[in-house]
Amino acid sequence: MPEQLHTVRNGIICACVTAASVLASWPVAEMGFVDDWSYVKTAFVFARTGHIVYNGWATAMLGWAIPWAALFIKLFGFSFTAVRLSTLPLAMASVYLLHASLVRFGITARNAMIGALTLGLSPLFLPLAASYMTDVAGLFCILLCLYLCQRALGAHSDRTTILWLACAALANVAGGTVRQIAWLGTLVMVPSTAWLLRKRAGVVRAASLLWIGSVLSVFACIRWFERQPYSLSEKIIQGPITGAMVGHMLTELLKALLCLALITFPILAAWIPVHRCLSRSALTRIACILAAMGATAIVLGNRGSLDHRVMPWLGHVIGTLSIFSSTGEMLGSRPVTLTLPMRVGVSLLVMAAALTLLEHLLTKPWRRKDYHAVSLHQAFWILGPFAISYVVFLLPRAMYSFLYDRYLLGLMPVVIIILLLLYQRWVAERLPGITLAALSLFALYAIAGTHDWFALNRARVAAVAQIHAAGLPTTSIQGGFDYDGWTQIEAAGYINDARIINPPRAYQPNLEPLTLPSGCRLGFAPYTPAVQPRYFVVFSLMPCLQVTRYPPVTYSTWLPPFRRTIFIQEAPLTRK
Image 1 (cartoon, rainbow, N blue to C red):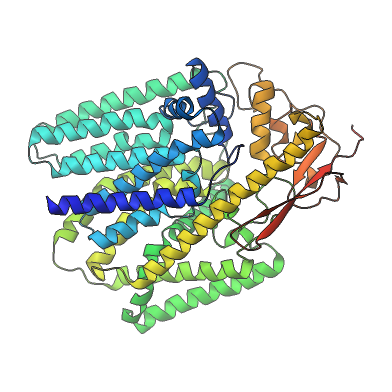
Image 2 (cartoon, helix red, strand yellow):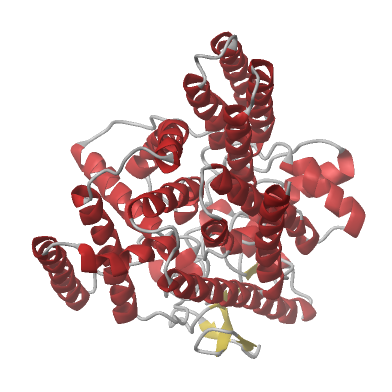
């Protein structure tokens, strides 16, 4: 049908725009990116031996992503770039599936493209699409399950409905092996869809059997993973729970909510013009809250404790795009593009849009039932239990540690779908121009930031090559977190992590550290005892390290400052 062809064409356009943006950032560097050095090693060993071998760092099962990446290694030869290239088709498919799901929920053609590109061009999604991290692959499995569930809802016969539900459950059981949280598709999303279809003959029985089979399959996969040498299985309850830990958890959840508003801001921004429709009392409440936030930012800024209380709120991916001066991957401070006042301004803008949406939802009267109401009902039933379950699984991490922004990738499509449905139902059928402006700015920043991240990594490789040219081994060089991880598993076979249970006594404490002040000790060093650094690649000159004869490495970036430099320093000769 012409309408279906039009939808397919738009979905392909969104997927191709995403791919072109990833390639435009030139994500080429022969070293690790975040955690993918561990996963790349597993894929390389599988391509060479046919065996799945973990190395003491992966908490994700990796599953089908291992043979998928091994295929690219066979086709193009081994390199970090070849392995990361395997993520690009999955990123394109994710954007395409989100577009298709948006259309099936009743989102108009123009708005569906904007929603899909809000994901594909996000500063959170784009860098991960250029890596071999499991986040994009896990998101692909979730979106595939959602799409198949929607096909079940749209099926015209009971038999076809059951067939689509079975496809959703089976595909998610297999797909969830890449990243365990993706199994919420078959465990939660499929039963929620079956509840909507409970009046159809045979659906409840079939869904019950599928759920039981899914639970057994999931437990079998988890049990297999726990038995693998050098795999890391995270416990849900990791120790006693105190009041301070609960407070920390609530703080992390609040920051996650704000970060979620940030990454969906291109659509959330559509509510900014809606302030003209609000009452004077609503505008007063919004102004008072923003004023209080601004005053708090000034006080905390003067105390020097504001950094993680403004956008992007959570660390790991977005903050590394020239936002945080300290990211823990290397010693020293890195240049930033978004200064603290700029980040405060963006934070207030995001909060203004979110508060306007909230006031609008509280005061807007319900319209008569129409196809948007049906879509909202379906969306809340399919996505609501899934989102709640997803957040529940984040609670232990928020309580015992910290949340990373990339953990929100699985919730991002949920928020996009709901925001678009709410806007079309209560505001207008067409998103305003401010949405396109925000999307364009986010896309440019994501592409430039990803380019600069890989440019930094290419500079790190060049810095290490200088030291190699003098005949020194890799284990004598601290190249940073994602460089040292690869060095460790190449030299010792696994990361020295205290969480390793199998094999017993694999963990060995680093008994002979360098006598350096705490400010010059990389936090990852205890995990890499095979790396006994004499030379350090650093963001900025460290007073506790010595200057060397090796010149600094300068590289170009697309975000200011456009010329940046990393340095090579030497450790003092004295040891404990």
